[in-house]
Length: 75
Image (cartoon, rainbow, N blue to C red; front, top):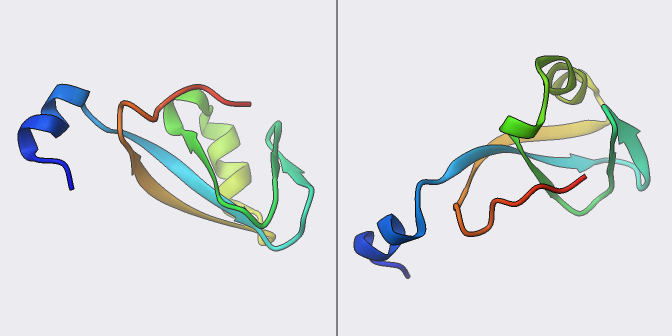
């Protein structure tokens, strides 16, 4: 487990959406989703994309913190 000093050295966390689909190979808002969780930083999404993902009944989306060391663009 990281100490507070180690966490600060890594930089601040960012917020993302962790998304899981009830079907394999489901696409929404320009992203592909499956049964494995996929985390997308909110900074990479437009408000319209967030709405499309969170409103879709096939997708389950929750906000999560992404440690700065792990935050990297993916599409």
